[in-house]
Amino acid sequence: MKKFWTSLAIIGVCFLLGGCGNKKEDKLAAIKESGELKVGTSAEFAPFEFHTLIDGKDKIVGADIDLAQAIADKLGVKLKIEDMEFNAVLATLKEGKVDLGIAGISATPKRQKAFDFSANYYNPPQKVVINKKDAAKYNSIKSLSGKKIGAQKGSIQEDIVKEQFDDPQIVSVAKVPNLILEVKQGSIDALVVEETVGASYIAQNPELQFAAIDLKSSEDEAYAIALQKDSDTLKKEIDKIIKELNDSGEIEKYVKENTALANKSTEE
Ligand code: ARG
Image 1 (cartoon, rainbow, N blue to C red):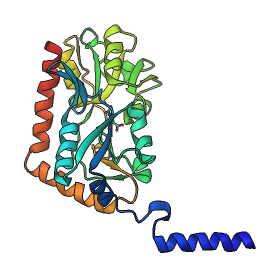
Image 2 (cartoon, rainbow, N blue to C red; image 1 turned 180 degrees about the vertical axis):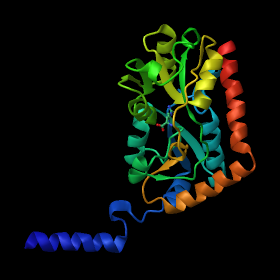
Image 3 (cartoon, rainbow, N blue to C red; image 1 turned 90 degrees about the vertical axis):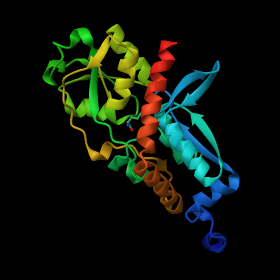
């Protein structure tokens, strides 16, 4: 009985302070107060986030990084990028170690159960990347039956491989550039990736191309910014910024500029 009253008292105090469970914490106000926007990403995904050398120094750049910078600027805070494996981005956000996940993250219904998402900001279709020399051989879903098909670990492409191919041997790899290398070397037959990203790596690897295979794509796969649950005020603010950047053609511009930058970095 004593325990009961103690618990009740704790609940009461929590209630008065309005802080328990952090449900009511205003995340937007907290970011402004800290002076810093912490963004989790996985910089192996050109043109959205990738490493490049600028004046001999390694830098993380990309369309998502420009988007993150625009948000930080509008909030009047500094941007801090935390680079990690894609597989860890949402988990790190859940733990509250970053404020946002911006990594070409598809706002699927499954993920929406655990996270809030901003409005969509990009929606590329799904594509299959193969070696040019295999173009005649791999030209249908059926032609890849039972073959080794790569997908990034923790990505929706893993599900797409499992759901849309017959009896595939799925090969999950942490980083997209390593998947590209595996296709080139022939240790996997194909890989599934979104068009804008695939096109960027094909431009850097002329022995590769898209297969003439149509995959099912859906609106559920569009990119959105991931936020912790109960981020209402922050979501509102970010949606407003995304709308402005979309309407003015800025996001399209980020993608174009960073595609050019990604191609340039391999030429040097
Ligand atoms: N859109 C896919 C997903 O959300 C892949 C995203 C991969 N992003 C990255 N930065 N590697 O599952």
